[in-house]
Figure (cartoon, rainbow over the protein chains, first blue to last red):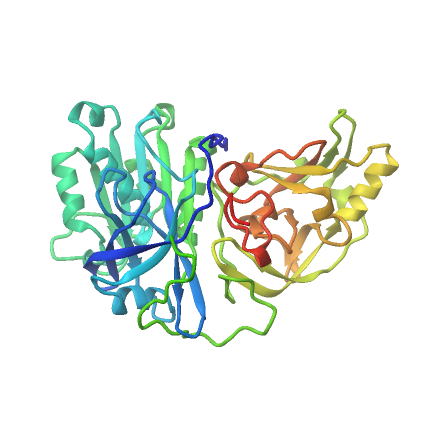
Length: 255
Length: 208
């Protein structure tokens, strides 16, 4: 694990009031907020923002959400999973609407990030809403020219409960056709008729089928719930991958 | 840029209020114990584990796992606060106070220096002022809630500095490098605050 010193000048991360320019339901449990953020300093694929909600009585709640949009995109996209017992995610998914303001600051995080400077094939493993920061990486890659893209082959292994729980499904399938992303889905609950993909939790055999051999030194990014991330990261190390090339982001219960 | 907080239309608290004085600004209470780390969980066999305190002139003192277990131990019960916004109250730990370790280092002729950098299996580092890890404020913990500390929570041993955000409580800790000067650690180089006091909400570089 080597940190690259962030030499950029570091003014305070100010709270900014973004405006919601659109909302988009992705799955029954997730919604994307498209935000116009004044003076947005730009971000790197994989970073997140802090969102702050302040009630009339002064009560406040903060949570972190990964950025789903590419650095090149005009708006900042956050995709939020609605957690029934939460208080921020139900607000963002059910109450917030186009035209509202939303206070946030960022971008935050300098380790779980990917760009074309990182040599080697790119292996992404997503559990559920762990796809969000990985989608920023896929979108960033898709925005590049074909020549640049060809230097970085990408494979995605994405586990979801059902076919309808796959966030960004149509866009991912387009990336598969248009930008050469090799995608494997594994569904842990029900599968659609005629399903040819995996139907089990991620295991060593599955990872071995999906990731490049360790000798090709892929960069692995693993994001999802803690048990998924622990399992995948440990298996990758057991398969011979350098722990320093396995970057993880664990989604805790951030209600 | 907002000088005053922006009121979120239609937002209300849906949580029971925390006991007064327990929850730092921007935090919420969780009963779970979330796991956050930047890479795979390292696994060092206890036979190969040791803990070292090194001074900047190169002198050092080292404990094997068995020697470390023979040191006097504390059982602090503390609140912990993660920069990702969760706080957990009344967590019960077992470990050796840094006061004990630093006193043993002094007895071996290692002179104190104003800063320390904790180093860990997996390459993680974090920097702390000596004043933040002395006076009963910090431990090397190997027990949690009556059991050995689990690897994903930093076992076999992690730093425990509960009055600072929890990234300062380095998992898989293997030693302390005493430093003449403050030298930013892993997250501190990546934009997180150098000190990390949750009560002053020092999350990111530039926060007051």
